[in-house]
Length: 418
Image (cartoon, rainbow, N blue to C red):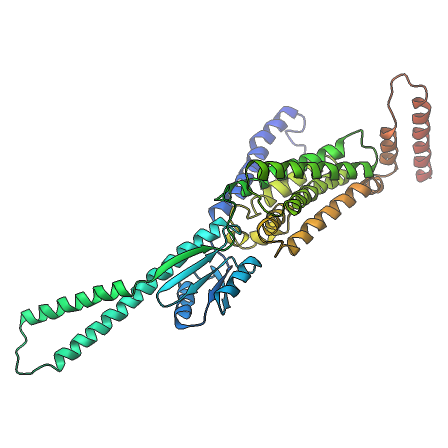
């Protein structure tokens, strides 16, 4: 059956504008807004210092109140917990004693998680204070009851005596509450840069990096002056290295957001750009202009919102965190944190992900013309060869060469038909 829109191009365009584009926009908004609207701790690795009764009660309380929120690691002392934070094994730790709770944070790892741990530490202190107060009240009540039972039996207990005992109990409870109050102290083991206390500059750099890397890949692939594959690869590497240096110059030199390991940080920024731009260039070489849209959908609309750069991967919904860390935007953001603030600790996996995407993308750029030539047949190969020849108007040398290419293609088609 013939479609009623097949003979009316205007109606097809109206259908695309009224149905397809709003659907794409809706999906894009959902992909960006959904992870941000469902931020919550999910198996966030944190440390607990000590194995005493107070530590056990703290773990039991957190498991009961926030099931599945934390992945607890026990450490014998505070120094071991600090080392674990610097090695990127945990985001922070709680040092719990009888009258105080020390929250070891790492705002450089995630300002959102650091704030969360501070809030949880205050909740633990309030609960410990409440429990200590209840125990003190119970002890005061038991002592008052025992004193009343062992007192002189000849004395008659009046209402005044009962009120006095109640007042005495209340005074004891107030004293116990003051004495047993648990204090909270927060220590930032690995602080974020002073010029970027909330980590806004750091997290905001992921999105423009992704967009600019795709633009580099598209330009390098579509530039007519870059005729050979190794020309494209070399130009892409130079452009990404220069862009990475420019990003670092702005982020550190102007904004002071990347204060440590300058050369390594520049190298990571360049590698992030290479991994994304090489993927975009490789997809364009393999599938044509549609590869630009495919790379944008993969990196911008999936990789960027699932990267966890604004919070932490463990704060995203289940499954999304793993997807984001297997894509260059998420792996790049995590590796940049590891390199800038943690001496590269915990960054081996993220480095491997970026290297894998880079190698696959650059390989596609190098062999893309062979793959597309085999897929599209001899005609496409002849056309591609003709496009690579210089098209100078009025040139006498160009016409015989083109005629020879077309004749050669025609002969190959005739051979195939035979």
